[in-house]
Image (cartoon, rainbow, N blue to C red; front, side, top):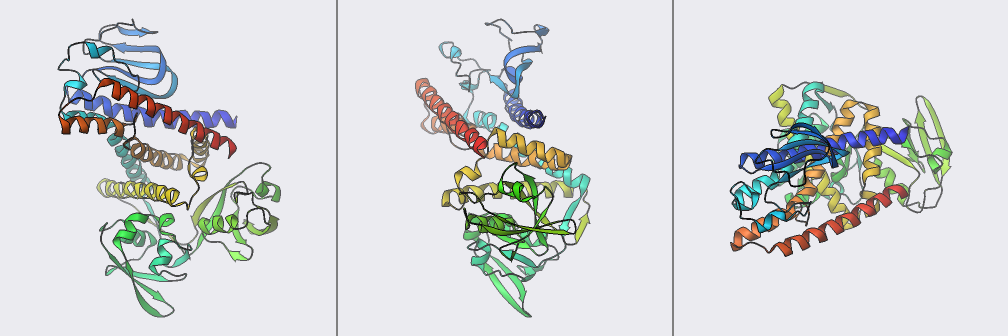
Length: 455
């Protein structure tokens, strides 16, 4: 049953994100007066569909079917995403039948650099817009929960925050002379507001006011968000989101919803703090303390050789919350801020992988991990599920725009090279790069699926 639930939510999430992405390509192509032969929800065999020539029909169309400018809208057998077939373009299908024919004005290959760039970029743009729309919708309907504190509860070792000079129990007074009254305002003030500029943060420490300087170049490398900054508010707690069967945590009796109190006598207020302690005690016993309701528990737990104990954890703020409502314009602005912050977190994670702070195996998640997370978020509620979808959508957008063969970014590189040198890249070269790109992507997918299974 758990498998079917995960599979269902995986299909829903991936289906929506890819169809939205392909719809962006479709709309942009039509705007540029380029024919789109097929718009498919799902992949593979055509179950049924509709077009102006045949009307509604079941099964595949004739092999040499010509829509004469009309799109065949279809539902295909494998409910994983979808695709569009744009006339005169070498895409993922590697279809080159059109190459030996006279170029037509309605084909992709006859358009200028700007038009081609717009069509290729439109999928990424739609995914980014979906992220903004989801975040804005959540904020409009639910309002925003502001953490009513500016006191620092935890500073990660060797983090950007520690190097800047932040310390435990600092109370933030202002950022660049503007007073802050919530943790949300503080994080936004130092990370996203006036991005790229140096910042000055006034904090109260043991009765004295201290001015901390934030270097813009260092901040850009770190990007936005509590995790990337290594800074968490007071009254924070680490909550157990899931417990894996037969792993150390499960054997100790830890349950979903429990709160981690301490490890080896050290009070836990950040999941980064907890992960750091467990990684430094691989295959060594730690005194683990946790809370369930009003009851306290403790046991000796031995982390694995990777510093894992078989749990998923999340950060929870337990202090006073200020509920603030926004109109549609304010909510949209906040949605854009959330989206930019999500991009920053993604970029920060990539930076941590490159620097070796996070191991690749722990950072990469594939279809199994996405399915499991989607199912878990759905069980927690529609807002959590939508939030996860928004984060996945912006991640898909960023990955797709990377200059890698077979991705949208790879297509853009070809387009711009042709535009700069004013000559077309030979078809054999394009196909070779596409095939290499597909092969590497398949290898990467195999790796992340294997990694998911091992995890």
